[in-house]
Structure formats: C-alpha cells, structure tokens
Image (tube, rainbow, N blue to C red; front, side):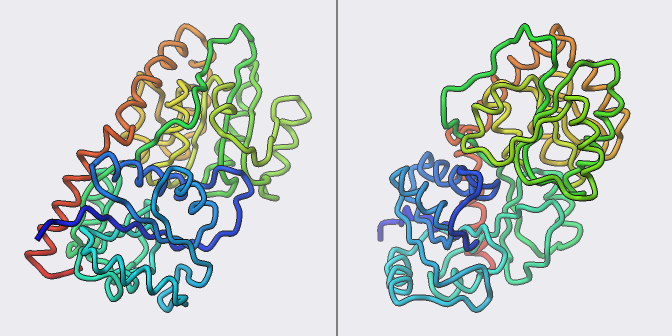
Length: 357
C-alpha cells in the first residue's frame, strides 16, 4: 500500500478577524508550518476555526476546512460538513496530526484515524495537556525542562520557520536618532515595565521608541506618558503589515519574562534588524550574542540600557544588521524542513513502538 503524504494541521482558535491584519504569533507559526510541510514534499491540510488563518492558507494554495461550529474545546461542536471532511482525511491515513491548540486531541484521536497526535507547545511554561503523549517544542533547552517535569512525553525539537512576505530590508540611516521598536502585547509578562525603565535611563542617548500592538496597559501608562511628553515614544497601534514597520527600525527589543520562540524576532532578522532580547530558550537560539543581536538576563534593566547604548553606535550596530539578515536563512521553511521531517519520522516510530497517539 502506498504511504500517505498527508499531514493534518489543526488550529482551533475561533477568530473572525484580526485587528492587526497579519495575525498573531501562533497564526504566523501555523502558516509557516504549512510552508515547511510542503517543503518536505508532503501535502498539508488545515482544519481551523480561525477565518483569517483559513483565508491566508487558501491564498497560498493549501487545502483548508474552516468551520465556526467548533473551537478549542474538549467537546467541540462539529457540522456535518466538518465530519465529512474528517472522514475523507481518515481514509487518507495521514502520517501525523499536528495540533496548535491545547484541547483538540479528541478530534485527532477519535476522528482522524491511527496516527501520532503531536501538540506544538507555544508557551514556555507548558500547561497540562494531559491527553497528548507526543509534543513538539522549539528548543533543546525547553525539551530538557519539559522532560524533567513530564518524563512520559515523547518530545521532538523543531524551531519555528519564517518566510518573508515582502522585499523590505532595513537600510543604514544617517539619522542621529536611534529608532527602537517593540511589537506585541503590553502586559507584565512581556516586560513592558523593564522596557520603560530602561528607556528612562537613556538620558545620554537620542532615541525614539516605536510601539506596535495592543494599547498600553493602565499600570504602565504613567511611564509611557512621561516618554511621550519628551517626544521619546510613538504608539502606532495595530498596523496592517509588520515588515515595512520593522525595516524602519535600527533595533528591536523583546524584554519578555517568558517566551517560546517569538515570530517577531524571526521577522526582524528577516529584514536585517538586530534584536536585543531576554536570555530565554527561544531567543537564545535565534540570537547569537554579539553577532546578530544581544541578550540580557531576564529583568536586568541596567544590562538592557547598556546594550541599547552600545548599539546607538552605528559602527557596532551596522555589522549586526548584516549578520541578522544572514542568520534569518537558518529559519526559512526550506531550512527547517529536514528537522521537521526527522521529527515526524521520530513520532511515527515511537507511535508504532508504543501504540500511544
């Protein structure tokens, strides 16, 4: 019997529209994983409750079933059309079912046939997805952490991939003002207080901080308003296309207290913008300290401010910008495809040995 080339990808977040136009991090990770599957020579099929994710996947020519009748729940509601699609996929005997939602295991296990159901962990601190035996994580460090906590899990390591959406590229600027960027949510976990504290310490640097994403949380508004009053902060809100925004920056800062494998870093590297980020598992894989960016210990405001001062010097920053662009090639779908293919084979082998899906 000829082996199937089908990989089913499930993204259960129920979304009508994205405020920002290009979607959030998991949305982008899903789309780029479809690119990786195609680069492996396999046929991806996306099951999703996210309308914008479905539209983008269809725009790339992928097979998609979008339904608003089910969502990220243990007892999802399924339309007759959705059940019909799943029966067809079951007959194709998929190689694997890859989940980007924590509670869609019953869909894969009961409706899509005998194949490994693999949960992609998008959080650095794993939630107890007790049904999944097969997990895919982004870094070896995270795999080691998870293995200590949950030794019974079957875990592979595959980084996120990123394919550029445009030909945007950062250009060296003669502007004396250092253009600093931040993209994303503005809560405590994202380290916005760390970012603002560092900005207030840069009395000797001519800079402007450009923020893109959610409105600033109320508890951090006073610090933001102090920067705005000095002409140091511009909040752009949600924007339609991220790459042109990033290409206008000199550096991007990611001061998070917790991250998995943030797509924002991949997007920045792809347009040639060096990144300063917290020394966490994911950023530490993407950023080669002193080459394409800089790392600092989580919460170390003074170290962050010191790094920003050092990159205010074009002689230090511009070689990093070139290295950032070159390093982004490690994370194209074509570069990640061999790792993904090896991971799928690993999960299929363990599935055959253990019978655990």
